[in-house]
Length: 220
Ligand code: AP5
Ligand code: MG
Image (cartoon, rainbow, N blue to C red; front, side):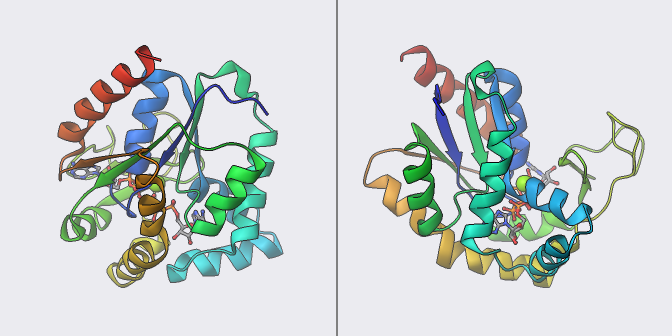
């Protein structure tokens, strides 16, 4: 597979990865792949594997590395990546082992974007998040509310509170991030590929990311 560009979004749960990814997709013509969305689609099939994945997600732990990479590979195989300006991965790779596997199977990223949001802000946000499960579109009662309460703006379907957005599960997910995912940033910092954006407001962080990516892609 020949990729024009490859960008990883590595940031804590609830930091706004998917919100920002949707904006990058729209603005820069990238194909956005969220591992959480692919795994939740697996759950929605009701298969035996889906039931296993559902339990893992509900507990706030991580699915097995090989399984995560298999679902990613299956999803990439279904896409025509040549029609996009690049690939944007949200939530994967999430362990150093997944990094190794991805690099072996595909490529090294051109950039790793990190959004650094304080954890107290995240716990607050996730209790206010509503998700349209089939598409992964997210809303927030304060930040980006749906036009009609409880209803997805695009399809008119129902929005739900994700099972892993309960405060105790969020705490578990944040602990996993610190211990298991954050070392990915150290690995890529040594290669000078990480760009961090710190703040509490996506609408303030986004113009900075937009400016940075415009400069980066236009200058290459
Ligand atoms: P995944 O779906 O990837 O979840 P996550 O990483 O925990 O991140 P979230 O999707 O919850 O948050 P986000 O950063 O996308 O933030 P969002 O844009 O929604 O993974 C779920 C599970 O799947 C994992 O726990 C694991 O079990 C499994 N999994 C996934 N990938 C895996 C892998 N590679 N290996 C193994 N297991 C894997 O924003 C959050 C909220 O904030 C939204 O409501 C948004 O509207 C709101 N918001 C954004 N900005 C603001 C603001 N300024 N003010 C107020 N609210 C705001
Ligand atoms: Mg997300």
